[in-house]
Length: 551
Image (cartoon, rainbow, N blue to C red; front, side, top):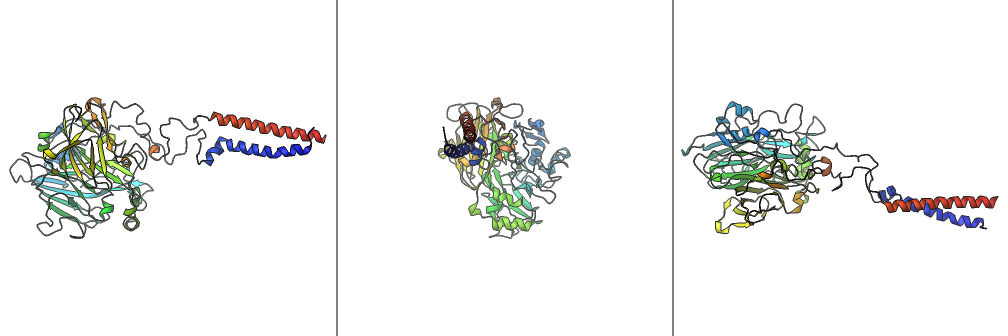
């Protein structure tokens, strides 16, 4: 017969068992680790979940090869091809196209004019270009959101700037939309001119900060014939172009190649905000009407005569990066005094990071819509690559080895040209590649859906979430579906990354489990049940024993 002291000595054991039960309880265990378990409902998202289609297929009629105002426009099988009326206007000039073409663009009539065949070879030699500065995803006094919006990837809208051909009409798609018109986008457009052209480029500064144009690697005089600044560097030339002001730069490039242009005001900030673009000088040929703008870079649907002599297709590949802390300076206020302070004084470039990496103005998976390289077997393809990130890039094309023909706009002696599968570029460098799709085990391994990407691995993520960044594909025509997307991809290959919640870091990797469907930890449940039973049994034993002694 036990006495009361025996039962009282069991009480601490009961408390120890209770504590052990609490610790083994799954909810407590997970909270201690900082993990919130689902409760049977979908987890709370920071924004409404949006699931994108791989291809919106807005203008399938733009894909076909066609002739507009005597301009031959090649086929483009991309999901999101360029507006062919824009291409016709960029080739002929706004002063040489029909009213129908003008009305099917958003380009101002004085944005591009071409005239005067000075050398009598059948193409214009005086080119007048007008550029303005646009802002995407900036703060607006009219709402708490951004305006106009431009998504570089699902749910990602960093503040950014770009040069643009002078435009007309609304900046948004329609009166009910806040989405930027298709021609208002990153990157700044590729500009193409011909050797020997007299080129007049006017910057109409529609922005709230001063800016300039500097033509990096492009043959130009230090001053214009009238003595004006022609290099775009405020330290060595005139003051920058103030808001509302204009300045015209005059070029007559003698050397062909792939170059750059960019703003040279507060270059560390303004260049990284997006005020940079590719500048291509084409070799002089008779009847050489070049496509002066390639908006969004990518596929060139009207290549120059010299390119057509050697190549079947041509692509412009422009790599950029964004520091989200710099980008948000235009999203937190629309007061230019506040923006200027935050961007030019508070923000410290020496402490900067690159968070978003773009190819032709988009990050994966949106690169699949307009940044694919499309090929057929036994083709010769011209790739022009420019790096305007702060960091180096190392581009690798799966299944192919291409030959580097030009560095920084300078052609290499054929004996010095290198064939390889990784192409390194430092900041502001350019290379031209000759990509051959002959299946010989060296230049190509055959048809496929081949990845191409930066092998500096941070470049293939969106703010640390992979896959993202500048990932894109080289796809053979036989493996494309009617919407310009790879037909060989698994049906669910893009399901996770086409949601804004994935890049907001609110979805698990790989898992298809919905909230409340996590697999149970059977061992913990078993131990928890046994301990609860033992605790209850011990409590009952103590209570009954004490009652028996009292009676």
